[in-house]
Length: 200
Ligand code: ZN
Image (cartoon, rainbow, N blue to C red; front, side):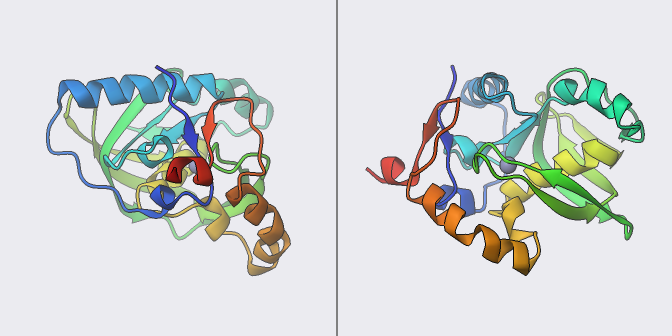
């Protein structure tokens, strides 16, 4: 089932999530729905608060990017030990254990903030511990685009949005546009729930 995506200004996007303690039928349904919702919106990542839920988990699927990454010479992305990037992955209770000092800048967007794309500096590599959809513990060292997507989604689980991380100058430039989005003056080509609609 495709779920409506919560939009900038919705308090749930600022609410820290709760760790998941066990795999239930409800959890599996949520994961399936989140993957379907991400595909429906042509996204490469989606975190639970974006569909109005506070379970500490997110889903990603980098396949739409794989061709572009080759063209842009960004082959340096992936994980050790490797995880296949051409399919969906679920990250439950993720924990960033280490971040590289080296940072890289890249343009980001977010399904909860339609029509805004801004360059964001982030560590180039991270070490991440998490549980798979089957609650199996894993630890990976991620780099490049994978590390970026993981950090963007991880931030969602702690109430942080990418627009919090851009320069103060760019934040001032975007202030009016973000206020409009929070007021519900926004359109997207996927189902959304604006802050006003989610309050009622
Ligand atoms: Zn996002």
